[in-house]
Length: 492
Image (tube, rainbow, N blue to C red; front, side, top):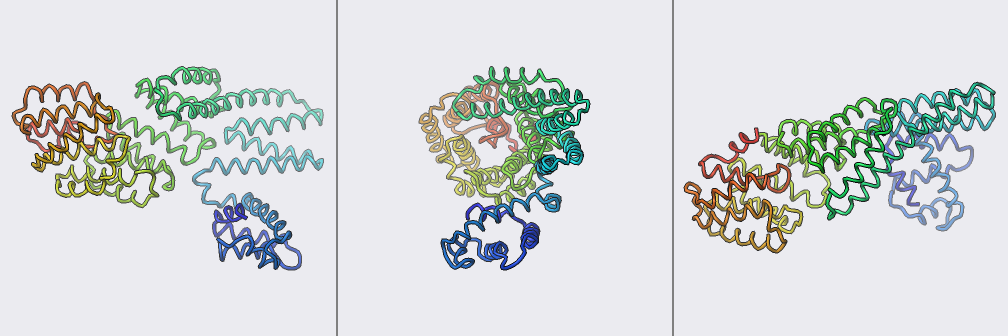
């Protein structure tokens, strides 16, 4: 009963209306048990199988009810494939390619049914229609299915079948490369499931996969192979640090998916813009990163997790392009999004940083208590939170508390073996600052040298836990300037 219940719960009101009409059309005489069962499910979605069986057949274990379940499930699936339903489903706008695929297989199945009845001319007519659908979708697998049937039909009628044979070979070759691209992508996903493995170790695999896919040249007719190839090249360029090449791959991907809607869903079209936003922001192109994130949000369905990622990127971009009010809007709207991991805390932290940028230190100090649970996070947010709290204590002239937090940060970095890199460099600067009695106007030689090392040897990255860029904050304090305007100027 669970599979019927789950499927029925996905039906829209319009689909339920189609279902009832369909069940009525199939009924001839007596009670319409299928329609009664649907009505009972509508009134009480959680009703048990035993209760349904008792209401319909007077017994909680009726064999007739078991047979009814099987028939109803088939009818539910039938309704989903009705032309009138397919053409009016709201999901078509989000995944037109998926619905076109269903439509293709309906046509193909109808052609097979006609052929089984000896209606070969009628079958051929449908197959030619299905072939057109396959070519519009740029699906070599669908094209191969149809061409194989057309070739067999032409043999039966003793027509010249050489053209079909050649086309079958062409589609078979293309399908082989598409399968390879899909296989490489799935295998790579499995290989990278171990987060502890150095990403550079995957380069030989990527080089071999990309080299193989490049052997197939006819990407204009069969763009799926190129789609898989470009996605792998994006990853390869990211690992190698070739960010500009990676951006070019992503721009080509957006054009490919726009040109060939038959191979893309709404979400798939938005993902290149999402990845582009990450690349643009991480390479300090804040405006283009903002535009890419906005485009991703425009395309991706708000119900998808990728939409949340795009919105977070856009919030970062807002923070770094002096769009603080827009950042507040996105943060507030995302609070309605279904919680994933520690996303609500991260949103709260981004809001804290937004308030800090506005020089509202007292509100920022209050907001620290609301995101304190990020101290337990092991992915880096805890480090950012600790450093930012020290900055805030110094800005509020609470130097005793700042000293205590600096010592806590030192113990934390030692405990988690974070003895190198940017967090350790920031800690050393803070220790020198503490020894200099928190005097920025007359920095010690150690402070000056450490700040230079921090800037040139331990580069800041815009995306991540250090939302309040520490070295810019330190320079602002030394120059007796406001932090946020200086940050915007440097990033611009």
